[in-house]
Amino acid sequence: MLKINRFLVIGAAVLTVFVVLAVLGPAITPQDPDAQDLFALLAPPDPNHWLGTDEVGRDILSRIIAGTRITLIVALLPVALAGMIGVTLGLLAGYFGGVLERVVMAGVDLLLTIPGLVLAIAMVTAVGANLAGLTVAITLSSTPPLARLVRGRVRELREEDFVSAAVSLGMRPRRVVWRHVLPNAVSLIVIQLSLLAGQAVLVASALGFLGLGVQPPAPEWGSMLGASREYIEVAPHVVLAPGVAIALLVFAFNMLGDGLRDRWDPNQS
Amino acid sequence: MLRLIAARLGLIPVTVLGVVTLLFVIFKTIPGDEATLMAGATATQAEIDVTRHQLGLDRPVLAQYVTRIAGLARGDLGYSSTFRGNPLPRIMERVPATLLLTACAIGLTILAGIPAGVAAAALHNRWPDLAVSSAVVVLLAIPNFWLGLVLIAVFSVRLHWLPSFGFDSAISVVMPAVALAARLIALIARLTRGLVIEELRRPYVRTALAKGLSDTRVLWKHVLRNVMVPTITAIGLEAGYLLGGSVVVERLFAWPGIGDLLLNAIAVRDYTVVQGITVLFVVGFLVINLLVDILAARVNPRLRHA
Image (cartoon, one colour):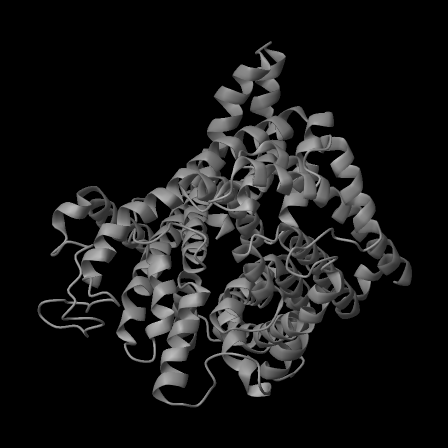
């Protein structure tokens, strides 16, 4: 039964490394991530700068490490919020049905017709390119798919015998949802949140790349890539590290999600 | 079939009206003031008030909403500060470039994703399957704009094979389309692989093989036809990714489409253009899904009366 799930182990291991980097952050960077070495602009990797330096001579490795915290915050905060809103809406719509369900699902379906990144861009321009704007943008584009999924699962569960039994015993709806429906949807929700976190990293870094996300000089990986576009001809190495960092983090969230799905819900994978 | 198409076409304006209404409600609810943003960081209160009046933001909310909808119905998006008037014609000029890019990306997805998935399923647990499955995992993790940067570094900077930006000749579309399609190719390959593996266990496959049909014929003719419908439907559902991704890819490659225009409009705070292009993306999403459903009905006649 306790078969080791490779996806889960790999995902959790990579994610742990990133979390440690995010917590320790500035304390363990080999150099000051904001210090400019004007004698080594766009320098290729060497023993002093393992990943080279950027256009103003900052150590890229230090900036990647220092940027882990902001990247994780920008991805996880909106996903946590989307989790709370999406699960609440999905539970209410799925369990109680009626007008409430019609209204919630109409809103969800309409939001799903707006391409996620376009919605995020529109939100960021309205609220501002800062943490608040990013949070609103990514929360709004992550909530609809989650709400839709939870509502579907809850509608299935509502027909289950143990739910009808609880209802006929006179349990109040709030207690039925809390004690019997939600616990049976938790695995699905956690899997989805993990996959959404990977998406959130991609959206946040795309916004950073476009100059609409975390603003320089904060060492956010997407905005580092945005700055590197101009120097690709002379120093292609500046392009490499931030992209690998983003890909590894997304990979970790994807593996975690897929691994949890294999473990909890083998039929779906 | 025709009735189905007509009904779906009729639904598009209704959905657009819903989206515009929803966006209007969201924009009025979230913090942030359009006039303040538009007037710029150095604007005085008087300048902000002038901007607010020009945009009609000092009118009652309901009146603003009615004006917006009535304008949209006539094809008038409102006053654009960049184009000094209704920006719709200038936005439409940019549409063909975006259409070409997304069409090429969809084409690449069908040509690469489906065969890769079928091959992986046919050689389940052998090396081609492992190669495809690993490539899927990698492609789903890398951001499209980074893939584009790497392509530029290799094929433009190093090898000088392909242009790194702009739209000069047919060859210009190669790198943007690959960067945009990569994620979708991975998703479709993974989906096709799963569907084909399941399909190969069906009795009709055994019957066809027992009748003496060759493996390739059964696979590419009978099995493929049966997995086509869910596969192209999935492409339609991912159209949102494709259109959103095109914004980033167009910026990276300086591709003259509506995504590029959207970002230019944001830079000069021309929200009329931003809102117009957002609506256009929704229309694009709905049209792609309509086309996908028509295609699915052509592949599977049972869907024609649904």
